[in-house]
Structure formats: C-alpha cells, structure tokens
Length: 176
Image (cartoon, rainbow, N blue to C red; front, side, top):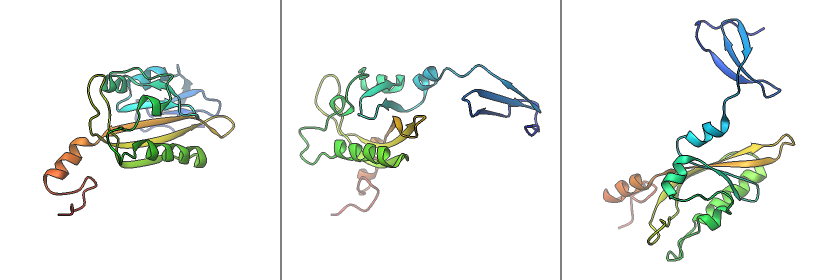
C-alpha cells in the first residue's frame, strides 16, 4: 500500500512496471491517462533530436526545428549537420560520433561540456558556434539502445564573453 501524501494535492507520478502511469494522491492511487509523450517531446525546452542506433534522426523537437530552420527527420545526423569544410581543425563530427558510440557501448549517458561545432544557416556561410551536448540512451526491452536522445544547448555567448576578458573557450587563461 502506498504511503499517504502529507498534502491533499498531487504528490508524484510514477510509471508502474507494466508502463501504466500512476498518479498518487493521499492514500489513493489511480490510473491516469498517459501523457502524450510526442507532445511533451515537441514542446521540451532545448534543441533535441532522437536518433536511432544508426544515427538517423527519427524525431526533432520544435525548438530545434526553429533554431535550425530545417526539418531533418529521416537524415543521418552527420549529413544534416556536417563539419565546416572551411575549418581544417573541425572536430565536431568526430567528437559527437565518439560520444554516440560511447552511449551505444556503455548504455550510459555521455556529456560534452563544451564543443565547437559550426553550423550553416539555410543561406550563407558556416558560423562558429559552441555547444554543450548530452546524449542519453533510451533502452529497449532487450536492454540494448533503441534510441538516443541528443540535447544541445548553445554556449557561444559564454565563449565570446570569455574571449573578451582574455580567457580561452574553456575558461582558462588564454596564451598571449
């Protein structure tokens, strides 16, 4: 029997073992309509993609579509977002690929705290951008990675502020 809530209002939402969503209030538990997770994902803050294990984009949230001004569902992530060909030292694709492979191998989330990954707007040249990227595995019933949630947060403004005060992108004292 569930423990009673101290307040009479909503206490917690838990997914039961069978996937049924339970809402617990007071000493009563009742099954509720499951949230519309497609809508939740679409409205989720941050730039989010869902990839299959072959790194094909299977879902894109609204904020990502607005920021990129592109619908990229069905594309390989590195075809949709290639490295900047004008930057000979570009490592964005390699670092994201290594992170995604780590997620597949370990079945654990991986975080890239600061990553330069230039982006190309629909019209114009590549623009220098910095990102914080988290890749989270979503496991299937067999325990293997079924999807990967990729969430990116732009850090370009922070890096530019650091550069203005003489620091490197990662916040260390820049060599003179």
